[in-house]
Length: 321
Image (cartoon, rainbow, N blue to C red; front, side, top):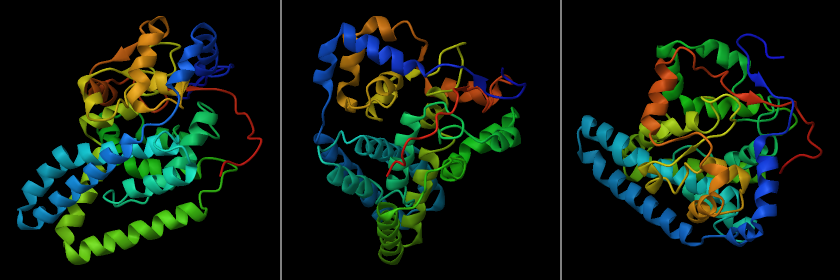
């Protein structure tokens, strides 16, 4: 049973397990979409170059110009790099895990926060334990959910500081250790890069990159995807996709149902999956505006962090490394 002010408990496996099996049985050629897209590495390099060019220019600009550039260009660029980190953690950029890990750390270079390896670990746990309170790092703790509640101001502040919320999620996840060799390497590399940016480009350049990350993960139209993905707005539907124009700037990140069904399909082929099996996706509720999703979460008194489906915890058979 579901308690008042608590998550929605469903005593069954998550929806993606069944749908994946049905689609594969009906459309076995879906497996032809599996693989990598090495052109993602080119996009990563181009976005990093763009961010460093702007970081080189901003020290000569007034603070309000830096703020505007961070919210517009910077947030979009850094959000795109987070999406590419997501691709790297699924090994859909290169075939070998080692190269995907290296490319993930490269994505981190303008992000200021050393997040690639931590995200890799905990995102894979999210897939393995989707909707399981004790193990899914995408689910807020009950303490955090109670603090935010359904107050519009607190929900807006929570979204603005969403990067902090994500950074603290591993503390809730049982049995998985947050630190390992790759996380340490990631942290050292980014700290060195941040120091070099501060020393040779100045504090304004580092502030531009930091603000770009804050906005990319926070109170921004792109931030609507954090709510879009798993917050319930249709009874019984666990995951939602977004098919709006911003997918062009976020490497199809909105195709979330499709991704959870088949996480080994790279971003560039997710629309092909939807086209191949339309009866499985066109019947689901989806969104065309991240901004509307964001505003509905903030101002709708019925929306809060508890609007999530959870499943009974399954004790992990082994630790994910």
